[in-house]
Length: 398
Image 1 (tube, helix red, strand yellow):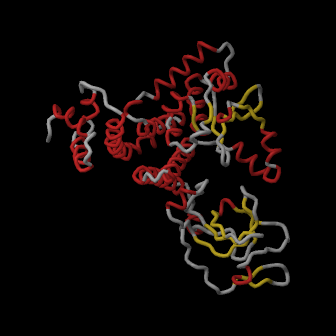
Image 2 (cartoon, rainbow, N blue to C red):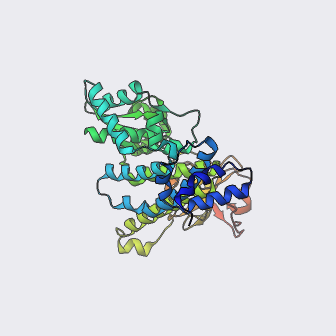
Image 3 (tube, helix red, strand yellow):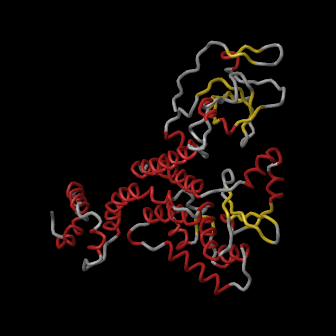
């Protein structure tokens, strides 16, 4: 084992022209483990940009190990707000580079303190005004897929993020002040939900804290009014929010081709899903167990996608999701895998989609389906129904 006294010399070798020497230096630095961070505080010079980049790679590997090891700790926290903060703090500590390290709890405490000193009125809309008008927190539209947008330390220090991370800052500061702010798991755009003057309104944290009435949202989604009404009223727990953070990070790391980080987030996502499935299984009745993953839709049945509104016909089904992790986590939503999934010929196009049962409902119209593969897989009956023939559905290449 090399002595800590050699660390300054090793750091200077990070600038060597030889990649073999740099790789060996990184290997030697990794061997110091968690003590390296403390030793770096005593070096007699500042790191340049390249040395900092390479040191962050060393710490990133260490932090992946620590995050994977400590991840289950937040599962058993009882209070929802504390559970959420514990999980997001773990992700933030992983995402924060060495030169920008900070304590998330202290940053949230400071925002709460500043609010109390700055605002005369007190309540959820006052807090929204403080964060999004006075402090100027806003959506990071120029760099939306930066993984740092899921890092609350970055979001607070830079005052920008994505909808869900900005909403979580709003929620966690509100928790400190006794102001109730809830999350709304709105499709494609996370919102905050608050009650004020006896009514429920929604705050769009990404768009400068714009306040939106429920009826305004329903008027935009006229065709899906009942579904949207149900979504707007649904309780969003800590697990659902963390699940969405992980899905965002998985998609971002896929786009950036950061394989190690992507695999870590997939592992954390799967471990959370496994926990949720175990909890759900403990609540299943004997009749549910006997029924198993029963399908709601038959081959040849015409269905409508709840969110996107397209019609289609069921051509094949699986008892659970058979897609690869890359396909599943690259999807905008991640419905439960342990439910029936369907291959659907999309009406009026040549597309075939793979859809979870929870995203489909029965189509009540009588309009015919048009698709180039329809007559290959179905016999069209005189009563307007479709009978699946024996032509096999090919193995999917996800």
